[in-house]
Image (tube, rainbow, N blue to C red; front, top):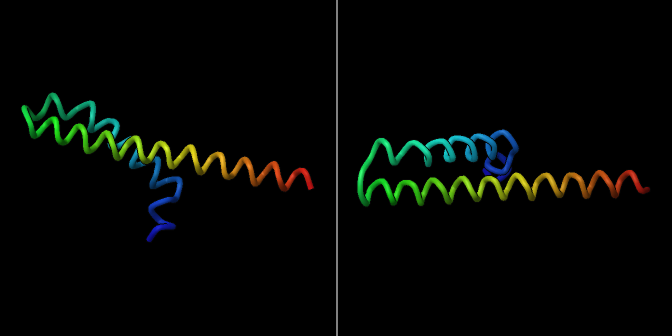
Length: 69
């Protein structure tokens, strides 16, 4: 399951979907419910974005290490 969740397509989907949802929710819901949803969706989007950055850096590091040999 971890391999699926940390795959690039899933991370991109989580990042973009939650980013768009975070922008749209204030127009659809009001009050505390909207605030909670925005915070939750925003945190998921940020975490997915961090996962994409980490994955990109690992791939670059591995690519450079392989090219140096």
